[in-house]
Length: 470
Image (cartoon, rainbow, N blue to C red; front, side, top):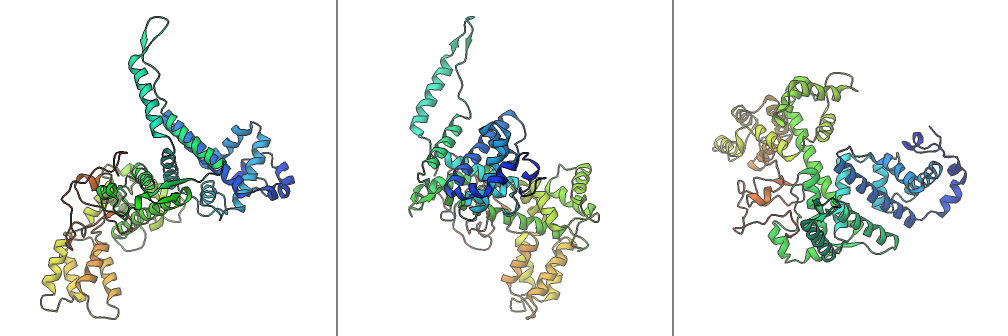
């Protein structure tokens, strides 16, 4: 390890002497523009490298290693690669708070002063949004002509010297992406404004959400793809800068992530039969079986051992559980919806009916004894009933009873009612719009008319996943 070199690069660089000697002089020459140019080139290099890895079926390289490989391939000599890598790191530290792109790269590179390390799924989402935004920089008319010519060539075929007819040259799957990324790099180098229409940002965000999180995202300003296409408010034509578009996308992603973590925490509480605040193996196995019915005792034990490997005992805490479930992609809609359906007990209609029966003679107010009787009839799990009781006692700290509104909030939270997560196409296939309150992407019972009279459009909702939509 080299003193004065930020980890993890203190074990990667081999020749830091020149940089440490010239650091002060070079530092005075650094500008935000120079660092931002390098950041843009590195991100586009990462996207291209990931595409090649995906086509080859190999694992994607980690960001902090790829950055070093970028400098090594650019300068060809290890001493120069070390020098300019360390210069970049210094520049990232200097301008960390001046531009979002700089901050995100510092986090992706795991630099200690860059903030919380960016999770892989979040990084891939960021890169996917970046790539989708770049696709709007390509001249679509020109690209369509080129694509058509290549199709014609492929249909006609060519004759080899041996007289064998072969298919014409196929379109390079990386061609469009490479061209769009190069366009972005060129604009950045020339300091040209990088702007997009808001509807383009929405498209990029929706595609990335589907690709990375299997989530059918919709903007809060509209409730259907038809409304977006009509854009009566003109919102979709508003301009956004490249950085504001990326920041908007990341904020929307964090909302979805926060909501999914909340569902997993609630599942943890419900599975905690002894209310110890931790899960043992049996509790964990039963919960995993709900999330993923295909899991076996062997796979559950393997995953559990991974969780407790660094712990002091054979139990796991909520945050550890949530982190690993997300890493295992068990926070996807298909898993969370299965979890929600299992946790709901008698369902919202049953809970409401029991409330009204219990409060028919008490002016629609429910006391603790009545609430406990409802829980006994609910067919809920012991952990759920205890959790609900705790919430009831908190709500009645200064009052003897609760009304239907407070009751519904407790029941929804504990029994995960209204917590169906929107999956790709869910808003398209059944004509029901996704929840658009900005609190993530829940398909709520309220939207479907169970608790209210939310209006549904009789017009068919168009699929919102192709270029022809919106």
